[in-house]
Image (tube, rainbow over all chains, first blue to last red; front, side, top):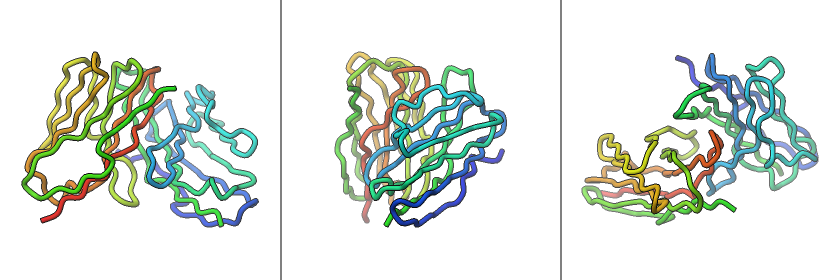
Length: 115
Length: 110
């Protein structure tokens, strides 16, 4: 079974530039998550989708971050404009829903460096 | 605000020794997860604990959950170098939204 795919794996941009990350979840997984992991910290949830609808985006800085999952499969996370503090690893995860365990499977992540 | 705290934050231990990592959380949660993260890599699921008193073991790692004390432990038996990684616990107080702990960076040396 193929895992969660993400691209690009690495990205370096200057502050005030824009960037987009792509995620393809495990086939059949209805729920998709984007996490931000700052160096030395645990992942923090940015946004959660159920199919193509947003379940939770309370931690998403909406003035600069946006995300979409138009057809309920792939998802894109965008930052515009980027700030230095956005330097982090952006992890995508997916889970099979409904289910009691709600186990999340993580992708390899995109490491973003903002200079 | 929900807090998930792990201790220790850093752990350097000799091969063959035993040690325990603790995960305390500040609100009720009927599920607790343990993940492993190698440097530059993503998170690998280790254990999912679903009920009070749950205990799971895989190789040299054993995890337990006490929901009344809001405490989970990850016990390492006879550590080997391959266990060197960062270990995260996470709770899910509301459906499937995970709140991660601070992480414990484990280094096992000969």
